[in-house]
Amino acid sequence: MKNYLIYLIAILAGCSDHVYNYNGVKYKVFSDLQYNDPSSVHVLDLSYKDLIEVPESVYELKNLIFLNLSFTKVTQLENGLCDLDQLKILSLIGNEGIVLPECLYSMNLEALLLFGCGTQLEIEKISKMKKLKFLGVGGNIYSEEELQYLERELPNTRIITSID
Image 1 (cartoon, rainbow, N blue to C red):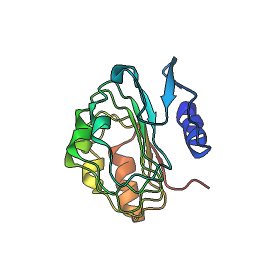
Image 2 (tube, rainbow, N blue to C red):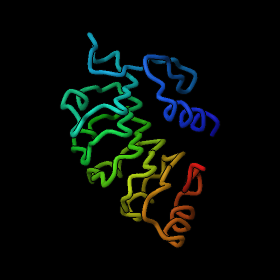
Image 3 (cartoon, rainbow, N blue to C red):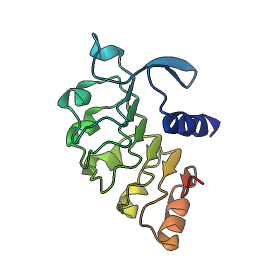
Image 4 (cartoon, rainbow, N blue to C red):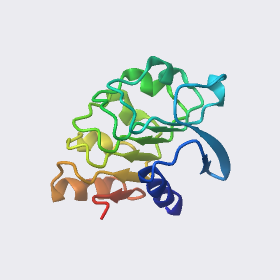
């Protein structure tokens, strides 16, 4: 759990061009699409970039484990996201009204950060994401009953409903 709290603090502080430690392995954080070898990109931080869609080249980063699209203008993710088999952490903080591909719910994500998206994802589908360790849903439209349902269905997932 500590790793995810540290991650959340780092992401909110705009941690870029540094090193991200995931499961004891350190990865360089890329903050743009300027890289020589796509297989060397494990962490991509495109937060605060003026993006309205995810560049197709991102969906070709087969070794990507952490994708940060927070506070961009991206409103829809394509099915290509689900080809990223190694992806474990997806951050979409502040992307209002984001539409996620259906295949996302069958991915092996460990962390899904949706703070402030102002949207309502289908609770039943999220509840199938049994590998999730961390789910950030603060600032979205969920009833207390829906959140309790998620907690029952995902007992090993830390569900954060606010960041205050």
